[in-house]
Length: 314
Image (cartoon, rainbow, N blue to C red):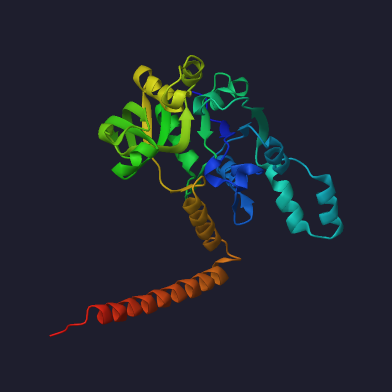
């Protein structure tokens, strides 16, 4: 069985939930402190043993390509100024992995985006990491956990988490027959099911390892939810034909397509930065304290107002 050495990262979406920022800048370039989210995802892949990354890009592709490519003018300026820390920082993305770019000509869904990378994948197993989802785990990176599960089982692995039942229609539902620790034997996957049809709150969250059998399924897939080619539908076919595993991964997921998820990622990554942590925590404490005092003042004012308008009169 081949080990997983390649990852496909689809980043061709329009990023409509982050307009107007994404009118001119691709959403994967949203910063987490001072590093683009797409670089954080690429680093997760490299730390897990991925050697080759295929970015599936769309509009503004030149911005993403530029981040992972050379910038001779800027490099020369930093070198002349002796700013070698900055120089190393801008050159580092070039060395994360062997990188390719493939253009998704039309927005045809998640499966269509992955299929665009088939010439680089061939008949090998490969990882899929969606650009909306940034993961953090202090130990083994999330995609690395899924790669380990693939090596143990030889089956397609779907990174999942238990989510509140009411939230399942925002994602997909992963039904299963039995569990073994963090691994679940998948029986059915449904893309964005209506709440009344939800049978499992185990939801896929942006990380997958696909067995070689998946590429043929992707090539023959028919349109599904929203008239698009959905990876969820391909995974459902794979689960019934060859078996698939849902893996309840260890780690925190940040939804970078959501403003609150973006803010959470920035706060928590900043607090993990040894150069920022102490000063940033001190600042957060002053903000929280000030807001708490405002709440107390407002609540006291409301109470006084209530007393005036509801005073007891004999």
